[in-house]
Image 1 (cartoon, rainbow, N blue to C red):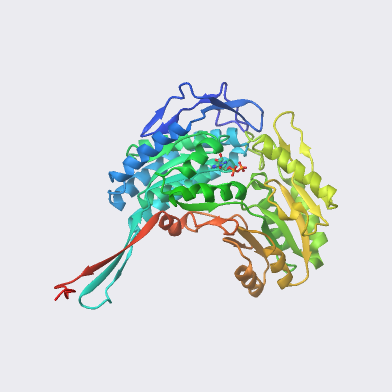
Image 2: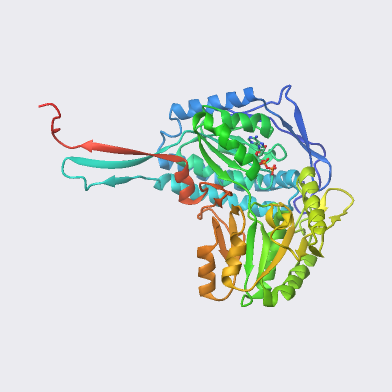
Length: 499
Ligand code: ADP
């Protein structure tokens, strides 16, 4: 890989990976190898073992043992923090390698992959601080004979199931916080994008994480993912993926009443008022749906815009779409890359066809872009959209934006909330009253005012309504992976029950 080139080259042959259990990268052996083709080029780039339910069992056993003997949870927060900080250094040292394999497997542009990997360094650093500051509470007001403590204890073995849209970023929005809490982990990446999860396991090991604390078992959802949800020795499952798959986990996780953290789908509104800085808003709206080809659970896929500027604003957005640089993910100049999976490519094109069949007006895009290889879709804008259309209601997970006008603040809020989802939302206005009113009343776990898709290690993420349960990241994210114990301590002589 020539780092000075503006276009990186493809690997000469696919890189082979093993799977990571109990502190070692185990060879694939006779396991079936999934050969992943780069969605931007259609060329094989990695070979990943598809693990079995027995492999998962071995990983859970290692994680269980590592939790039960307290080799990690028994350390001081300071010692756990030291490992997390060293991991941050390890990511920094291997950042280019991680970004390269992330780009090859996911189809996202290399510049974006580099920025995401850079961002994960801060997540480990922040979580290191959380490992040291995690604490409970005390009650010194129970009278002279009693004192109360509330302690936080790590919840145990945590399963982490991740999707293919942000394989490394989403993993790192969970792993450092789970580790800060003192838990052990069995992670299953999407079968399409496993490489960088396996690299992270190596980095953690080199940073001094004890054996068995981090395990990565690549495999399919129905085999490894389902077995994780059902596994009696996994205490909590953090799942990021579709609402449909998440719903299925509710039953499977019931086997041992494991705690579930769910970050699911979204149909996220971008509400634009006529008094906004419309130039900023158009740029933000284009970014909100164009970024990662709209394959983000937090993509701003519904533009809800004040009627007086609706047509001219849609034109401004179309102008922005025209200028987005879509193309080869290995080209450093590109802002948007390929659609990650064949199935997703068909799904998006299916929604675009459905939108047209339902009578929506195609204002921009709508077609597959032909670069000779790989699968690419132009940023797409639909006007004339009504709330009953599938393009207005369902999560498309692609670069497809629908426009709906509104007349009043109340109407804007009602349209924004007219969805089963509640993951994220943005409002664009220069009126502070409007901004605050909309921020309060729109049901969403993440909210942006005059910006979109902003994030970082400090603020929690997660959804309202059918977008999920629980929160990841921030101090809230660490606390999710703890359980609370209340302790009553009697002081002095007990007043007897039996005289
Ligand atoms: P998508 O359709 O976008 O791939 P999914 O929700 O199917 O979204 O995938 C997210 C993650 O869930 C992936 O790691 C996938 O392998 C996993 N998965 C899929 N089906 C199941 C299942 N039945 N149980 C557990 N995990 C699953």
